[in-house]
Amino acid sequence: MPDRPPLHDEAVLMRWMRLEIGKLNEGLVAERKTLRRLLEEEAPSSTTKSGQEYLFDAGLIRQLGEQLPPDLHRRLKLPMLFYFDMTVGGSCFLTEEAAMEALQHLGEISHLRRMREGRLWFAKPIAYDLMNRYPTVIQIVMR
Image 1 (cartoon, rainbow, N blue to C red):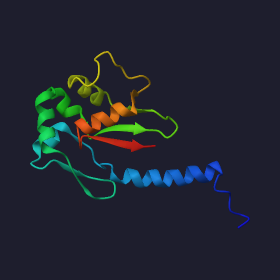
Image 2: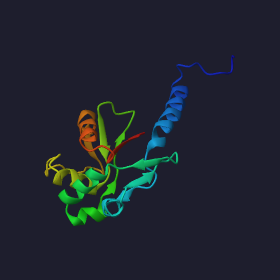
Image 3: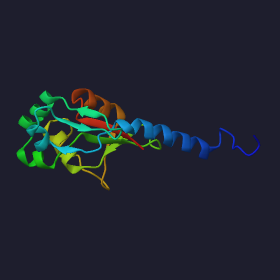
Image 4: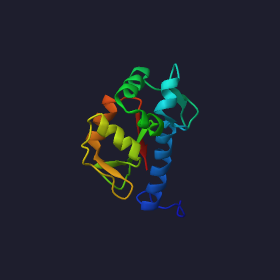
């Protein structure tokens, strides 16, 4: 078809990538809950953007409740979201101070780390390691 743009056209690739990223993000929790609220639930859960039930690891939620101060119970929304931007190859970022403070309290990152311009940057391998240590309470958002 002569009117169809070539597949190597950057605009075509970006549209296709956005569609695929949208599919990946359907598994994200639609309503994030505070740690306090999840601690009150017998089976801590939420719903994904696609409408599926998302179950949190109840033992991990209790563990976070024991290890984190009460102030963070009401401010920390779970899951914590790490943003992966397709224009930034090896890094990702958090955008919430409460998530940064929680990771500092848990000893996962230094208390000297600070957000810059509303973002706290991580190397992707560190984010993957944190996901393995804290399953269900960290999700990756593709952008």
